Image 1 (tube, one colour):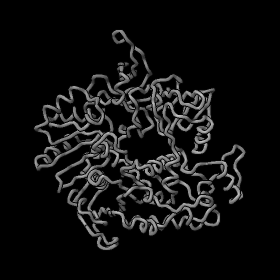
Image 2 (image 1 turned 60 degrees about the vertical axis):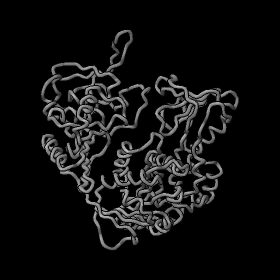
Image 3 (image 1 turned 90 degrees about the vertical axis):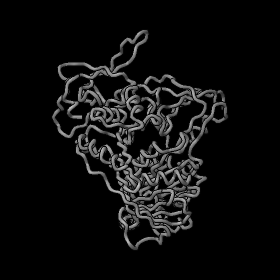
Image 4 (image 1 turned 135 degrees about the vertical axis):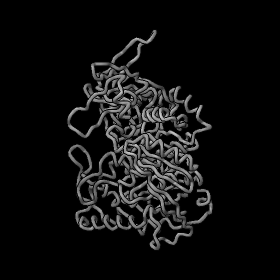
Length: 552
């Protein structure tokens, strides 16, 4: 990577990279150049897959806790002329990403082509979307409410979900986008006197804060003047509830022309084109869909989208990189630095852990460093137990990320440091890669186990102050769960038990033979909801039995 990234060329080409290798090299590239990286890929599916991989590698390789996290800029799920507004979650994700990019808070950004081709406003317009509220500063409550209305928030009592706010006297509750908890703001006149996070279920305060970021749900402020201008230009009014007409987002260029491309929002980005031939094909598909809708669209498609050629022309002068899985002759934008890198996906082990251990030993004997990835800490602990049983030394790659690693695992890993070329890391890497030139093998969770119903993506990180509810794991009494060490059981409910002079909450899980297991809420990383393909209920394991050990 150093040989490639430090040559200072404007254009380059990397070929021979499978998806996991692409994500790894781009994370290392960002780390080496200290410039934001924009990756444009073909479809929503490829964007989500590469973003997932980049986020996993970023968590391990990011040099500082304060580094901006990777962002995904999605495409809309509707088109101009369909009289449908995009899904609210997509609008929120785009709005937050555009604000962060324009505010110079971007590291690695992934966008499907249809998302990258959407025309944008100026960076200064997006920087005005969010609010940063500080204790002691002045702000009128009416002005705060008007701004929240314009960026997609709804007034509702009580505040329970993201995107809601309420006003009661001098108290202003708001649940910011992408926040773990809502915040209660107490005003004295127009001065912010105090701010506290609170539990939306109990409505009780849990943590005092001095600053709060209120992120947008919409990338275009819905001011009353803009809605009047839209109604005049399109001759379509708002709904009886005051909401703009369906698909209004595609009419905005009629009253707020958009001349900027996505890459123009960055400060000196490295623009990466993933599989250029696929990008050209996706561009043709998009415009073939747009043309028949031209007459019914509120604005001409050229005012809403760029064409791929225009987007590439806007990146001229930037440092550009083309990524290809196969090295093809021709079709390139004349890269000045072609580099072929050999990578291949690992052979799937299909639950055969004995074969995985044997292959890991063989790779280590050839001078490879081998990293096994698991989606949760519980799965890491499960792999650690398996490797210990087979006498395979390992190192832990999760201490810096997550902190709470059981002592016995830390001790085993510490004793094996001088011997181990195998690392266990927590991260959602489904399919890994083997890089012979770098003597590096990355084994994903679905390389080890078949696309298991027992392995699901970890949810949004939760604060250590978070209060567990069954809904946080999508659980209700009677649902089946999987414990990383004890196997399949049935969730009964929550129980409070005395522990010394205090009491503590536990999850009660029932196993075969009516055996009961009490799991402290501090170890819920060991629990996942069972998601089986069959309609019949699963066979529960016996607590302390050997069936789950054999299954592992």
